[in-house]
Length: 357
Ligand SMILES: Nc1ncnc2c1ncn2[C@@H]1O[C@H](COP(=O)(O)OP(=O)(O)OP(=O)(O)O)[C@@H](O)[C@H]1O
Ligand SMILES: [Mg+2]
Image (tube, rainbow, N blue to C red; front, side, top):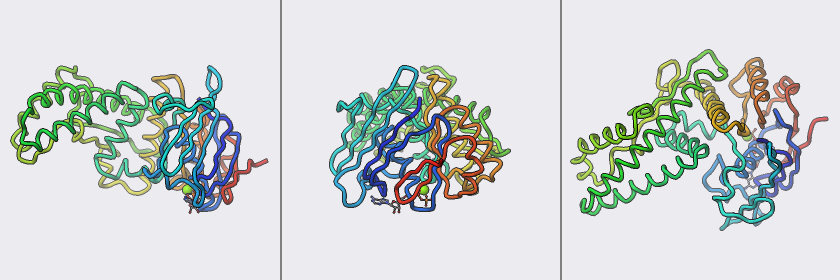
């Protein structure tokens, strides 16, 4: 899967841009605040209908304009598709081949993986950020997972309401939580196992070893076993739950840990280590996606050079480009020159994108 022509209008400082992306590595080089991350954000928006930088999609609209638009042509084995998203202050519209469609019919036509500073919260932020990352990654890969995660959220909401209201009718929700939660735990466990293998076997930027784990580890146990474990946890915490009037056990509270050489990264990773781990995780996500579907998501890698020396970054770019399409940004011309031979370069200035000749 790849993106060919890309058109962006009124997104942050990009007034109007049109560019033809190369099939492998695309390098965007320019000084600070010129629009490099904004372009990656436009591709992310086109793929997912939301920004990887903010939950407030409206803030992407260029100041002074009523709406933004991003349009791209995706190419895969079976042909071309035109995708378009339009965001105004109070609404979002999605189009496939010029026809307006519902989100359900739109999402999943262009897949991306993202590495950007804003996502460091996956490594260093709260547990919730890691759960969200895992559930979203697995959800783009498996529609059934996405549905399951949604169902589970609803069960927790309704069970919390029952607890809040003094626990009447709670038994029914207990059983729902056990069934849906047990299944989610098992599926999440399975996905984490796949990521783990990809992290171990994938391309290493540093000499460190990375790992991802969750507790309880339900990936290999059957569904019934996962449900039994959850049922017991519910029994154990029943009193606390009634007292605090909140659901305290289940996948919405399960820890997910990222480890560097066996040590929890959220507390102790240096800035460089956190970035390298996030990058490894991004590439592992891409690998799992490829193994599962045979198609490679477009990699959006922002400020890729900031923690890597030229040699490592060069090797990484070669590796990335050999597997699929990637959009990479840098503010350092020397670095861009160093990796230029593995892809095509665009110079970015004031929201304009000029291919290097
Ligand atoms: N809604 C908006 N309307 C107009 N301009 C905006 C809007 N949001 C952000 N900008 C501006 O867009 C410019 C480009 O930002 P962007 O983050 O893409 O820069 P960048 O090239 O990635 O820079 P850096 O190298 O510092 O990461 C910035 O000057 C920013 O202030
Ligand atoms: Mg940037």
